[in-house]
Image 1 (tube, rainbow, N blue to C red):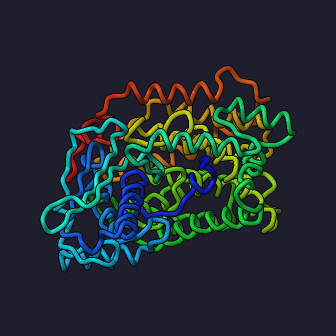
Image 2: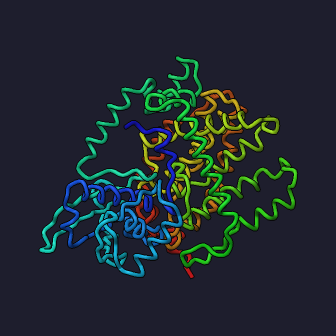
Image 3: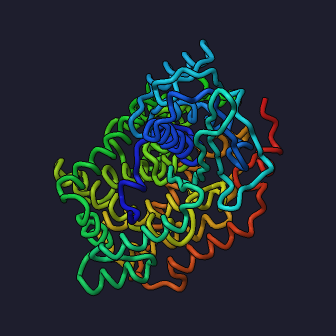
Length: 465
């Protein structure tokens, strides 16, 4: 199916969409296939191989435990944090995995086979599943690639998936792959970028369903912040990173009782930190468009709802409208990155995660603040242009340093990009399409050391403990 708003904004668990959500989804698909093909009751052995970035940084990203949960039949958009803790504790205590939720099998993280230096042809995030019978004969096997944002592709089906994507786009009222095509739709039909996205979404669901779905997405973002602000102490993983969001919130509540506009950046920083601290804890977050960049869009949307001109007089219906328009516009820009480049840090570096999220957020804010399609496109371009070359080198393979602070910095960039664009008339020298292609080419040229392998940058120059 064509990439839609609910593909780019999906609910899952932290800390990584490509290393946690995608692998869990692939494992769940494999488990369902075992039931569907009727081989489940004959399974005597299980083998899981992880390749490239999944193997190199999988422990820090929770890849292995996510796969165990997927193999038990859990899906990232449905599983709750309490279920995660309960099932992982049970597997650790008993050494038994409930394959597809039905067959008990001795299997644990230590049984997975890692190939950090082996890159499969399709993508650096490769994983292979195979089950065999008591005699060792293979009953069923499958290879998947986690290509960013929780999206997965099955080996051998890449061309078919691309063909299905292209065919489904033909059914859309306003198909687009580039920003130029998107702007032409806006101009020809007198629509905003968010309205073009809404018309396309209505091809598969009602407007009421779209609205309810997007408001639910935002409610999960808000819940993520609320949960994070109640947590204290250190983040898991061994880096001894202290949670800052609860203390920052307490200070802000004392210093800014009346929501003074001069504190806008402190509030934006707080929301971004809170979301990403929750993500680093393996909590429930919204991929936006990835987990590693999950705090940017909620933080900028918070700005739109609390600090944008005119919002102090807005009622709840008006605020809901802002949420819907913001997310639809951000998603339209996200489609451009997904179609023309990548949102996978393992493929193009952090410019594909934090950079694309900052660009999407800038576009959403510009539209929410009354920008024209040209100004919205300009805002998205500015934000990405100043994230080009951003590397992905998290210390210890954990989505903590520099990821958490990086979300706050990128949120501020997005707000500034939107403001700059709104002070112009929409005309600018570098187009969004040109900067997206540049991001893609920069990612290709970037050394693999700086693409989520823990082999370069901060990951090797900072002592972990």
